[in-house]
Length: 204
Image 1: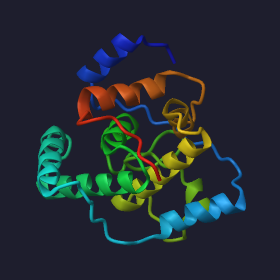
Image 2: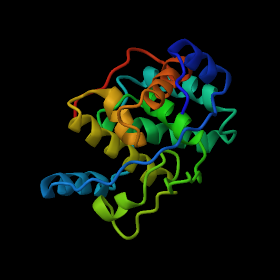
Image 3: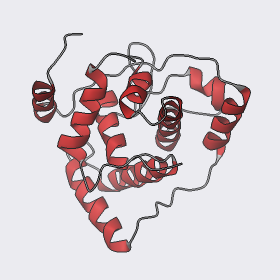
């Protein structure tokens, strides 16, 4: 893939916000304790109830993000359900929800049934091998909440592996560790399309 300068990349993302650069997480054997922990994180089926610092911030965030997402998701009810779930699953994994929105933009262009050439599925382009590793036989990667939970849990796992280095964690997520294009695209989408408040990767 041709290298793109940071300035040109940001400009390209701004002009083509639906550009898709889906990759593929690489299979790596997991220690039993890590596998058990990830399985437990996936298996929690509590209904998403995103907790915002205040009711006003909840209203402000959902209103702002919803207006930005309208063109990609015209149905208001589905759009708000999606945003609430992104917020819930991102915060649950200690991730910034706006960064997750940037990742989804780059990975799938917000297409629920997107499938990459390598077989990655859904909004966050999760590889099917994760179902066997940490999911269950009824895990459906085209189900919105399942896909978002797997994606956020996997990215958190990579962040832990990389000791909080988001750039390298994004490379692992996309299967392009050591190559700059994908992390730059996600960070540019986060900054240009979804920035809201301070950029924070929260604690687990």
